[in-house]
Image 1: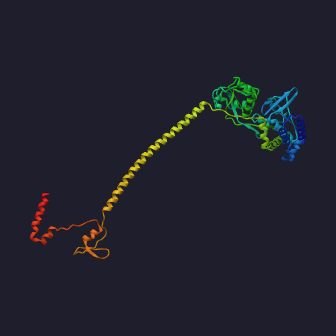
Image 2: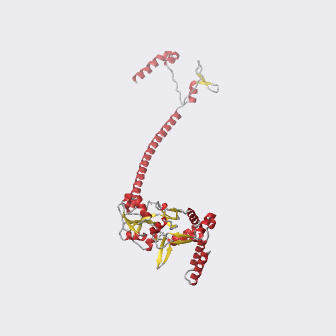
Image 3: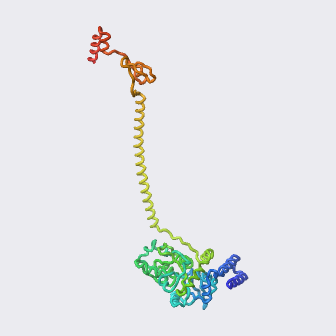
Length: 414
């Protein structure tokens, strides 16, 4: 309730001074309401009792890690700023404790005090094996991909392996510095150690190093703030996303659970609003001509292979169709000839009753008829009548021999 009153007083003063538009006043008012909503209903009795015994929590923060966290100083007055400062305000107001930033320390000095249990909470840091020796971590609450930054005129860099033998600027003792020294010794990098992310980018911009590594949120913030127009995001790295957590001293496991519950209580709308106030991401890495040419060649070769296979298949298909058509034509011609032959030929099948004396045959209906008549009715055969030599001698003996000799004489001449 105290925070709500303070925020409302600020809104009244700003309104009287006409320094905020109406929309800004409404936004600020609801932000204050969000920060002041208690989380005590999420905590059990033991956790609430623990908070009552520990009303002051000492924080170790990064003094130069925009847009996430940094410290500004004007004379003897220090101010903790950045995206994480809003998360700290939410913790402070929802838990009802006082979050006291330990000013006047750089981050490495703060880590040393954390090992000595003189700092209770680090509200923003990456989990590393070294830090896990004295801290317990929440689940990541800020996560961005890591990228490689180079100058606009630099040779093409597509991945970590392309940095082989190059100079890379890294903030001393921070996440990327320890990761590269531990896992990428095979790249034989020349490491240019810097104090902060701004120095990293300026080292690249001024030609002191060939590239630097940082997460996309930090890169976006500093390239816009410092107006380093000659820098570009060359490529994403294969390194896992930069995931920032809160680290609690390892002898306070109950407080680690309390912090996690409070982070889980922050709504998606609140998270989006915090991000939009501090980070304006614009990630548009371009494609190098070498990559374009390479992929064009691969795609072109693939198209040529597909076209070649298609033409070969199409030619074989045409030959097969032509052969099949020839076979079909020959078959149709044969069928036509067979049909024609069948139309010209009639056959008699089965047993045919015939008289042994007069040589008449019996039809299916029972009638007897001459054999030549029966055959003419049931086939296309036609008869002509003549007389054989034997019958001629029997029937016409007086003229038979002369006619027979005359006929045989004609056949011999032929």
